[in-house]
Structure formats: structure tokens, C-alpha cells
Image (cartoon, helix red, strand yellow):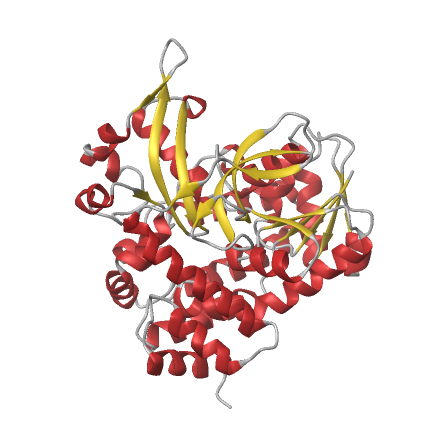
Length: 448
């Protein structure tokens, strides 16, 4: 079986570890990136990570070469690199909004420049590897997956570790194994909620503990990497939001914390990433792969430990002590959800995974072709959403508004239409102001 990774960013070694240490056998992994030397660097690290596994790693100099004969194409592209994210978030902050690459104006800019490239790649997959599944990592994952799904015939699912991370934190808070906790979940990518929680009793029956969780302040506060939501808000919603709802529920606080820190997450990651790439390249040139892996682990620990702290409390990623644990062993993460999805799409028995897929009848009120983030049963025939859910009233208006924004963003991005771009950003509930939308579009996309 052949798998391609398109876009070899700093998640690639994690993906290689996940693939190499999975139940997949006789797998050939091909890496492709437009940045000179990037695929080769990741292949060198990958060889060290997968040294005792059957995974075979190669690089491709051209995209068709990487895609040809693939069973799966993992898309993780970032047009413009981290510098573009940092620029988007800084402009967004100056325009009056929190800078975040998947929500608000910065998320719009990321989608606008990425959609045409993602569609081009998907059409190539459709042409030369028509039976392959595209596993879309590329952010904003929901919009990109919908663009591919609605504008090409390629088979695609979108993945994100945010729901799985929340489920894991809930299991930790309850002191129960993850396999004994079941969460009802629905929404869009980076706009989802847990609506019910059940735990397995000794007799094997599932017991609803939603009320118990909602009424325990300590449990609710333990579910997030920073103080994002007050317990009163969560109880009022009767829903447990994923962390990115913070940018909708507390937009002004998020921006204030960024202003207080004097930096955005993208700017901090730009500095962190440049440093790590320089060190990795130096270690690989010296053939000191042990040092390269140590450097990489330290980077992941620094990045993960600082997640959402800047926006939630104004704390820099460069502050605080280093943590010392093995990020490859994490229970959740992109590498886990990616491998789990690939294994499920090859299995005869269905597995339950939260994915971004076409709505069909999964969430009432949305269009069948809209991409939603919902629990699915997944096997070799593809993903199928579990049941037909109704959006709770306290979430319905926000979901409908954001989905309208996503549709308009796709409509604007394919022809690069500035007029529709402004309309899309105006429709985003974070902005909801025509003049501000125009200002953001002019600055993010370049006046003229």
C-alpha cells in the first residue's frame, strides 16, 4: 500500500511515527513538499523514527509522482508557510479582531489562498489515483474539505484532533478509561460541542453522566488547556464547547490577551519553527539523528504545553519551564486520528470516529452537501454519519451563520473574487460589519 504526505511540515515526524507503529504492514510512504529540501529532511528523521518498523519512506520531486498509485493522500499544506499565518494574524489584530488562523479574518485569509490549491491537488488525485482517499489535515479543515467535496469527484474526509482531545480530557476528569466514555458530539470543524456523556457501568450498560459533569466546576475547568469558559456559561449552554468556540464566545478577551502579550500565536510559532528547522537541518547534516529527535521532542513539548495559553491568559510560548515527556506516546493527536481513519477505511468492521464529511441527513437544517463534524461509522465502504441530530437552539444560529460564511468563502476563493470575499467576511459572525469586512479584505488580500 502506498501513502503520500503532501506538505511536510512539523507534524510529519508524528505522522511517520503513527504510521510506522500502527497495524499497517508493507506500507510505502512518499513525502512531497514544495520547499526545497523539506521532504528529504523529514525523510531522514522518519528513517530514524521508523527504524524498527516495516514502513518504507521515499521522497518525490513532483506531485504526480507522489500521488500515483496511492491508496491514501494525506494533505497538510500551508500556502505561504508560517510567515503567511503570522502576517494574517497581525493584520487581523490591527483590524480589531483576535488573530487566529482558522477563525475570523485570519481564518478567512488562510482559506481564500488555500482553496484553489487544495482543489487543484484533489483533481490530480481524482485523475491519477481515483480510488485513493484524501485525508485532509489542511486548515481550515472544514472549509477545505467542503471545497474538495463540492468541487471535485475525489474521495475525501477531513480530520481534526480537537473532538478526540476533548473526549480524552473528559475521560481524565471522570477518572475513567477512554474506551468506557462515550460522547455525543456535533457541529462544524472548530465549532463543535459535546451534548451528552455516558460512562460504562460494571454490567456493561451505559449511564448518562452529563448532568454530573455540568454541575462540577472543577471538572469543567479541567477540560481546557487554559481558563477559556466559565462553568456558568457551559451550564447555561447545556453543551460542552470545544476550545475554538472561545474565539466566538470571548472574542474581545482573546484579542486583549494577544495585545497584552504583544504577539500572536502565529508570530511565536514562526520564531519557534525557524529555530527548530535550523537545528534539525544542522543535526541531519552531522548525521546526528538522535540529537535531531531530541530537538524535535523538545519543540513539540514546548508547542503543546503553550497551546491556547496566549489567547486564554496572555502567556507566551517562550515562558514557563520545559516539560519532559514523550509526545510520540500521546493518547490523542493528529497522528492518532490520521492512522485511526486510514485503518478504519481499510477495515471490514466499522469503527466510530469523529470526521468532517458531507452532511447528508446528519444535522437537520444544513444542506446535504455541507461538510459537518460528526461521529461516523467508518469501514472500507467509507464513512457514514451516526443518526440524524437536531442542533440545539443555543448553537443553531451560530452554526448556520458560520456555514453560510464557509459557503461564501468557497464561492469567493475559486475565482479569487474580491466582491464575494467581502460578502463572505461580512457574513462571518465574528465580523458582522460591512466596513470592517472591506477593510480586512483590502489589507489581508492586498488593496487594488
